[in-house]
Image (cartoon, rainbow, N blue to C red; front, side):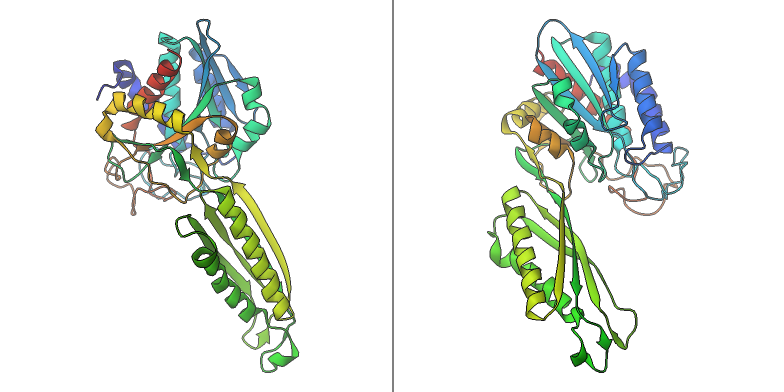
Length: 394
């Protein structure tokens, strides 16, 4: 595996930074300490910075030569509102906050690449180092784009990377087209008329309406969309009632919708609204329907994905660049890919064997209280970032 020797030698220091970030996790739009650490490191390495996009965002500007070509490399910085189970020395010092998705590792890999690029400058053009806040539901990428990221820092393409547990360390996964789903939420309030449970004819019972609605939504998936188009409708919360002998006035349904295309999303939202409104009308109830589109699907651009695949193959060998199986999870890097060509890949995080004894029960999966980023990835991820930037700006 032709990793860059300098990055291998510097990996322990970068790993120490990563573990410091892990011990001091900060939630979306609260990444003040994290942003300060990133800004301090970039400044020490002679990289000019811009701060303030999306509140706590940091952009490093690394220029060399005369070319106007530019590439963007993005890492997310925020943590999750989760109590950590791990007992190792770098476990979270902040109760109820944890780096359970590896954003500490993403930040570390990009910092390692930034240091190497600043020292060697084997490229002609500009590398924009994008340290983004609030990926975990906050839409930090959307805010950075809306606040002028690509106008202030014009780049030809932008690339992102996420660690992926369960894949064998030494592998990357990348594919053109949709790789992560859109994330959307709905809230439906069915307003009936309360009554005594022994005299239901005196009211309008919202409970059986809610039951029929939950089942009817699944016919959208099985009978309205094409079978080859992916889509998920999950009702995950049902709230209603306060006593066994009272028919409630209302029932509330909440849940999520995931798709790989806007067209399928449009179809699902329209049909859900029709079903909800018409079911309530049929039973003399009223319907309040809310549908919020959080993140669009993450869709890799074919040319940029192929370019990145060739770089990965040079780093780990073509046999270790596998197809990226699409996941119904969501990622706000999608907003950047709507505005610029680019690609988003996975880097293998292993199965958890890198954790020391005493890490806590449970698998090493994303958003799990026993998760930890694998520091062995730092030189490999950083090597990929460096070779990607050098090849793009050759």
